Length: 301
Length: 265
Image 1 (cartoon, rainbow over the protein chains, first blue to last red):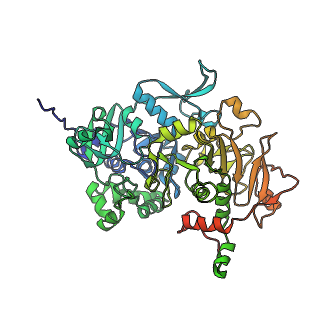
Image 2: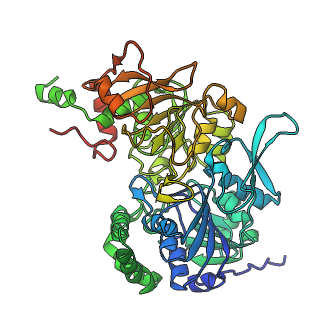
Image 3: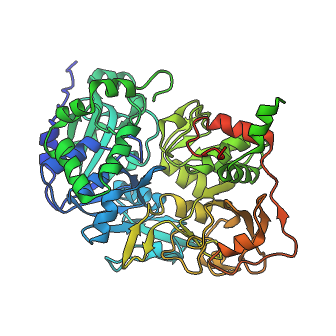
């Protein structure tokens, strides 16, 4: 028997981010406090990317940093805030100074836009958003279209599918071929990861291809969709990854406090992002804090 | 009961009153779509009191969690604990909610108009935003598709307004038939709980009307803090204060007072 070759798609964080060109459109993975690609956001800021458009359901500190650093010029999303704690400080500032555009959809609409993109159909029908200001757009003529269903006559709202240039997802584990496992909820990552033309999977751990193939039902994103694999432990800090670590509430509150002013944000950015690298960031957070945040069994947080 | 403990339970905060009202709106065996904050407490309280067989669904993908710690987020790992399933948004918002399987959804609001329409997106306007609020999240989906909707929010003139700065999530639109005309499948809001009172909707106008005032609150106080013309029925009864059992249960759910700051001593 000829042994199948395992394609090695591993890249460094720097290499993977380098491929993202200015003006690119990105599906942004994770949902709220769960598994956002926060370290990838910090790397995009270090590499001074510009004019990115981000598509996601709901994101928090991670995309707020991208707004603050003027890396993102546009969000298409349903939710941006620091849930239960406060508003997204940089996002609010950039919107007010008109340096950031936000096209609002609902969470279901965004998830369906990714699902449609993944399946290669131009739109998906939903039953929400109708009759509200979510139908309006400042930026384009047709954001959605409400029609009468040709079969039943009921009113449905068609939302346009998206096929971003890249999908960026933080997974729990991934093998060198890109077969990714996700513990806990998946938010909209399953469809989002399949919507991008190129897919970057960052993960808390790299596992052997044999591990994947011994339990194929655990694969949430098959490697055949994936272009680049990045080992990125603590990649969602200060948010959480189920079974790996809890969110860092102290740092999240510190972030919000710092970002109350533009100067405060600039200082934070220099200290925690541009003036350091991935390892340096974790060193600044400190071993003691990181050990404290590690998930406890059987809780996973 | 010991005297000191009784005294402790005789005092309660407005948030505790609101959580109790929210919980009482849930019937046993119902499926509940809860957001973070007071709705989580309402859902958990209902389950531990009169509605033990109600089932909570959280947007991020959690189905029937039996969490022992309070979540900060609808994607909080704490909700994975003893959940029946951890899936994703397509399941919770698409199949469960839009599929017509959610009996009651809870929503908050930065602004609410007299028909129960909600703003959670901008203060100012879409054209000239002054403050960027979080946005719809799953709020518009819940408001559109849940069989019925309860709204929990703070009571203030700038929040209960004649005209929304931005219309994020549908209540009864512009009156009777408004939702049907638009093709929205759910029945819309039936209850608004604030720190001053409970309000319901008039069947013939679909406008908000006063239902009960919380203990110690007057009708005048409610009207002074409402930015639209609030209909007041002939008799307005007092909201039933939280029972000792409700309060004890709530304080066990939120022992550190994350969502319910304790009444001032």
